[in-house]
Length: 318
Image (cartoon, rainbow, N blue to C red):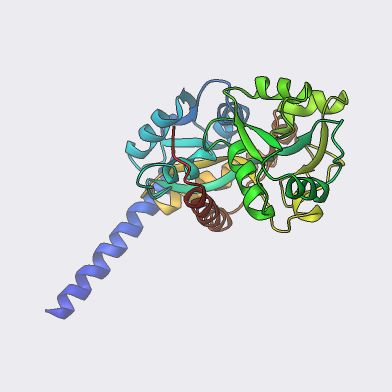
């Protein structure tokens, strides 16, 4: 009896492998739908930049379908795991489930393919403040607990998470001031109503270049081409500090490995094309294109980091 079970297991395993190989050899035979979150948003811009070259590589039309984030995630999760539905998703794919009550397991419905682009936040202060380094900001915040404040987006946004991670790692209490839009926050920064902000390079570049704000650090582990000449938080006060806004490519869970490998190969080739790199940098993101293994490991570490912070601070989705 045991022998028959072993034979049946071997037969079904070989059949499954054979089916996946055939699927990958035939794939793709029809257009591929790529969901993104919101027309004009970061993930939508990334998807539209890479779509023409990816379509040429795959030999099929790549159709961009921009929806609100919850809808795009739901549609991708429910889609058949056959490689004909993908999603370019922002960092919220990791953090949004952790903000639910009770917290949900992130990424359980998705198969990671690659981190497509990343961008750090920039720590900025008003130029009248006696702060030019991260260490000076920490020293001032410790000397004046609760007196400094920072501009933040919605609960769980990159600016909010960055501000709270900074507070936690530095052992300071810089008070959050929430804003509905980055433009309003930056405007109040310029007038000195808010002392500190953690926003994307694109949100603050004109004010920094015009001397209306001072950039003291970026939140990537390495210096960023998006903010040349600005040091990292990790190197100037808080070792290991890293916050990245990312746009990454995923497929529905249970998509055959051979198809994931094919999509990964072509997406990374597209990301490495000089013209695509130039367009992505101009749009505010540094192209990455890492391996599925490295990407999966990074996703797990991010889920642990943000899960711990969200639990410590009691953050909840609005």
